[in-house]
Image 1 (cartoon, rainbow, N blue to C red):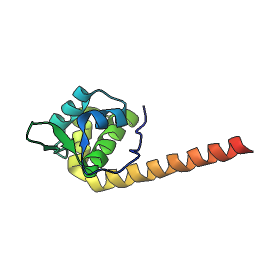
Image 2: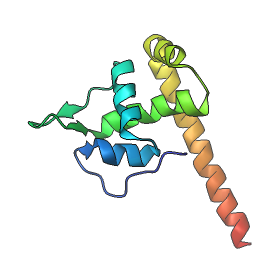
Image 3: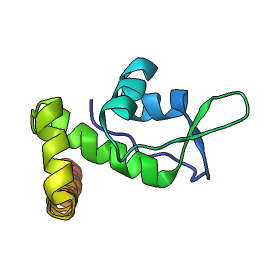
Image 4: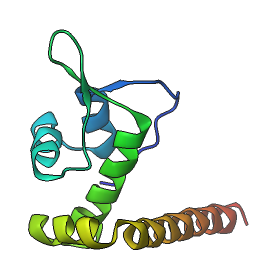
Length: 111
């Protein structure tokens, strides 16, 4: 399931909100947190994970590598460790192209 953009920008998002954004369960988010060093959500006094917009951006990148590109956990870890900048640029290009495609589909439907 594709990533859904949050409607209102907040400083922190709960793990449940983040899981809903990605269409996965909370255990998948916790698993990714354990597997990827780039994920460092804050924890409140109760120990609840609180994700920032930067954490969500990192999750989008992880989700892209695992779900859309079909990489393994080890492959995605290696890709992020060795060349995060290039991976991020490629992800941004793909995301932008998907947005353009969606706009073109909407325009076609209006014709």
